Image (cartoon, rainbow, N blue to C red; front, top):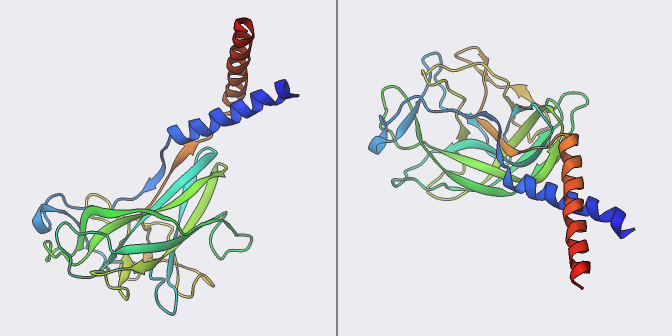
Length: 264
C-alpha cells in the first residue's frame, strides 16, 4: 500500500514545489504611464487623454455605499493564481517619495461577467499582500508636476487557487485608507497607451456594493474603457509533465530506499 501511495505523495510535493518556484505574470493590462521623468521631482506621469477629462473612477469601499470596479482577464492555460494587482490613488498632500495610504481591499474572482446570468464568484480575497507607489502621478497636460495623485499598485493574495484556461473577471474595492490619503477620495485611473491615448476596454463599475453592474464608460470619450489589472501565478504543467513528476519522484524515493536497505 505504501509503495502505491508514495509516488503520488512525492509527485504532489514536487508539483507544489514547482508552483512555488515558477511564479510569473500570467496576464497584464496594467499601463498607466504616458510620460517619463516629466513629473514632480522627475517622476513619471499619467496624463489625462485628450479625448477625456477624467482623472479616474471610484473604487471606494469605505463609505456607506460601496463602489466597486471590475475588469476581465484571460488565461491561455490552466493556472495556479497567487496574486492579482490593480492600481488606485487617494487625493492628498504626500511627501516624496509617497508611501501607500492603502491598508485594506477586497477582491472577487468571477467565472463570467459580474451581474450577468450564470456568473458567480469563485474565490474571494481580503489579503492585501503588497501595496507600493508605481512611480507615476496622475496629472493633466497643463499640471505635469502636480503631486496630489500618486498612483499605487495593490496586490491581493490568493493561495494558489486553480483556474482553467478561459476568460474571468476580477472585481474589487478599497476598504482601508490612512493619512495622507483621503478616505472619501479613492479612484483608479484607466489603462493608458504609452502615446497618451486611451484604449477601449471591458471594465465595469458597481455603485451599490455589487448588487448591479454597468459598463464603465468615459462619458467624454463615449466608449467603455479598461482599468489596470495584472495576474501572477504559475501555469499548470501538462498532464504528461505531471505524470513524469510522479514517476520520477517515485523512482528517486524507491532508489533511496533500496540503497538504504543495502547499507543496512
